Length: 306
Image (cartoon, rainbow, N blue to C red; front, side, top):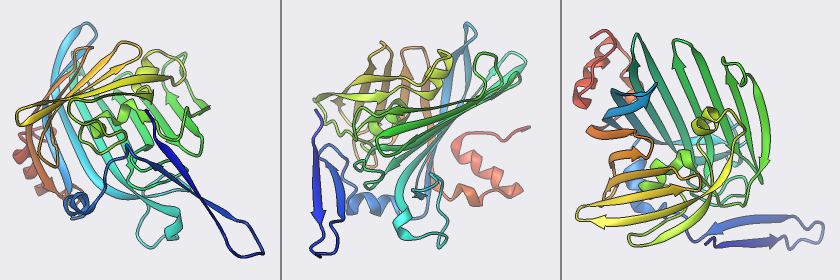
């Protein structure tokens, strides 16, 4: 289960007794020299997938793109911290995941975007490897939806905005079951060994989990806590990471056994299937000139209108 140790360091000066708390969890990933050698080169890993997504009673075909890249986050605001803007004490490193899923539903298309940030060092009284922030949005011809969750000291703050009746604008703060928790929206990172808790091949572990923001939206209710049973099985040159949620849903990820453990495919018990087309490393944010669209060819994708 959870292994948390609290180290209290008291100042030796007689004028005060200020305590600094360090939160450590033995199941946190090892963000060691080998990890940073791969992820501190200033580039992102961009992967394309052929997507199948069930919607409105039919299976839709589309594409998905995942982006993994390290960034620096501002503790006080929960946003990307630009270099030299704020004090170092207000910053911590994160691994960012952007997952964009696009598919057609008859005359109009859907674009779903998930953005998850996992802390690569202790932050907000939580150990390294725990989700720091999640944002999920949906854009389609009927309207927009947006939800965001921030994992702060002892609580999770959720804000949502929606075009649809019965949802509207909402804000809530829920207590966290513990300092070390998992978000369903961080399972792609967990499958790669980038998020708490580490589960080795052949092992099984249960953890508290905040159910996906998209799932709570579809239930038209508040964000929900549950549990998740995590397991990993070695199958030759790949591993299959499985998450069974307490509400009965299942997520399965096939990842490369060798570092950096790229995701070959992912699927859900609801029928979502994604199979990798191609994977590249680049500075995608610099490829925003008209000629940058040519970089999509490496991913087997086409630009809008092409």
